[in-house]
Amino acid sequence: MSQLCLAIDTATSRATLALGSLADGSLVAADTWPGAHAHAETLLPRLQALLANAGVGLDAVGGIVVGIGPGGFTGLRVGLATAKTLAHGLRRPIAGVGTAAALAAANGDTGDVTVCLPAGPRDRYLVPIPDDGTGARLVAPSAFEAWLAAPAHASASVVAVDLDDPAIPVDARRRGAIALEGLAGALLRLGTAALADGRADDVLALVPAYVTLPRGIGPAPEGAAWSPDLR
Image (cartoon, rainbow, N blue to C red; front, side):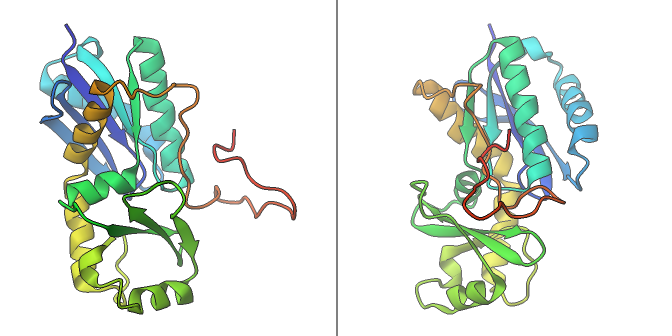
């Protein structure tokens, strides 16, 4: 009987793969490496190596968890496509987990926090946790600085991921580094809980949340909007 869960996340600067117990999400093995826009070349070989090192095959995977962002276009498309293809081909349930929620959980945050992520070279993407799907927003540099300066956003409530901007409090950046380190385990915990509760996703309907459009694509014309999945 299949007892393992496979987790995939390609939303941050580091690609993440993990194997864990399908029963409780406990971590069995993990691999993480710099994505560097090379996810298509590295993800499957790293997955094969992870399974081989764990001494199991794909038939041991009983469920799949995938981080759905927010994140950059290239990484998310590769990660989602891989996870959905595996779920469909293996006939396994799949659960999409918000990467920002997993990052907050990886940092041990149980109260209200905001996960801050880069969106292109200068803009920032803010995701309040808990997230009801309506609070995330893209902000320009000046607006982000003003947001940081607000008394309600002390560094204790900010998790800054992949942001080395010295204007961001050191504690917020430290929390972001801790979150990245613990992302694999958090994905497994949240994803296996969703599968256990019967909250598997429809593999066809599962789409990522982007922070920017793909490179080379301009804003939508006036009166038009991009589809969330850009399919």
